[in-house]
Image (cartoon, rainbow, N blue to C red):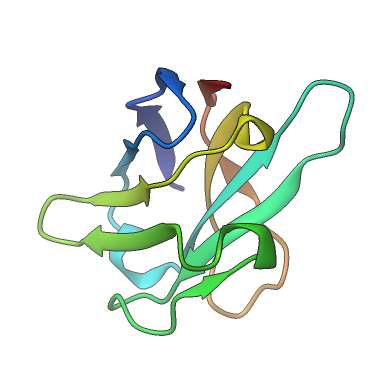
Length: 119
């Protein structure tokens, strides 16, 4: 089992930056790939980025490539999402997720943190 708690959301103007954090608990955290997803009002939740167990193999959705960076610190049981050059269309609730390496689905989710970008 893995418990996830996001923080770092807030309101910023377009072009600004935020760094989201996801604190994980559970002895198997460091063995799990981690991901960030987001859900905008009236839309389905969508994939943003993911990272491998040891911090390798970062992947990004096309809308955030070159602007967002995912990283993790297994010593601190934390995964981060650095978001730069934010756009109004980045406004959403951002969720942290974890999955066992052998699974394709993401069974563990945090409660989400709101990011609002104004123009």
